[in-house]
Image 1: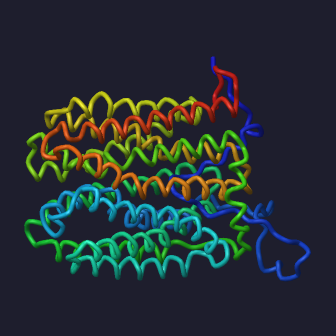
Image 2: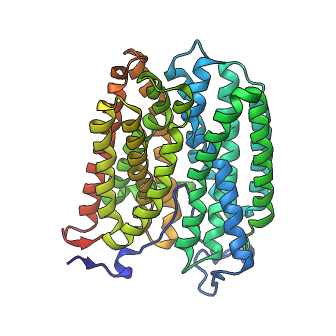
Length: 447
């Protein structure tokens, strides 16, 4: 039988995938601090329900749909760009667009958390919505690589970061006992957004062209962002943001250091599948319409994985589950992707790998929260995702360069990408194992 560690020993803090707002401390000696809240106010009790609180969940769902939908389906756009606007460029070059977008979203989230502490959600959401809408409409007229990089990579990334942080932080203020349920509902929108975005793009591109496809999506995004701006509110007054140097103090702890390194290698291995699986589908003879659906299968698996594996981790332990599913995330590319030559096998791989990797995307930050106090949880998670963002930045170009050295028109040309993906995931699993036994050396225990 596995033993359940006591809550006091674990200091569990459940938080979703994405960089949350850093916690802060207050200076009682400064008279100006009266207008700021203490980071752990014992008198504050979240409502844990009610119309306003569930309205925040609705707004958060809409915001994350917009923030993560396009980035979770970039592989679809990359396959289209290669045969249209950016036909003369290599996969490695085109992948910089999606890599920069994810990098800016995650790295920007570290700093947006501090802005949320100081000003609340209103101006972050409003400014992020304006930037995101502007970028979405500008994308419709892009023709050159540098235009796509500036608009889709940087502008959409900045807008996504400004939108994402308030959507997560506000839920934490409105829920306590039901926080897991509320967060679980909200984070499904990223995968659903990837599915919807992929389906709409694949259906509209041939009918109305790239320009009007992106404009239609921009209007849909505007509607969702309007809902987010109207429903996401803060219950608490502003507070002083913690020093930015505090974000990386947790790296002095071996368990958090190994977990962060594991998160970096995991992020390095995620991008090859999401970015290049549609192009791999073309290499095995799949129709172009089917290739566009590959990211849909990945996102379906990811949604199921986040829900099911999250449920399993509450009973088996987050670290124990992290070890298992990061290992499976590395094993599947080295066994199924390398040998895949038919569309049914490709569908099976996409669903299974999306399932295990999607679960890991929620497990790793949950592990970081588990080994952190409430005051340090935000800072540590900011460091985790800030550091991991650099892996997202370089992963796509590295994989593209590996493919470019082979024949991208043949399945064998993607063996290097599969090996790169699987190897980095297995290194991630080894780091999580080390972090797990640094946290608790006992074998049969829920950690």
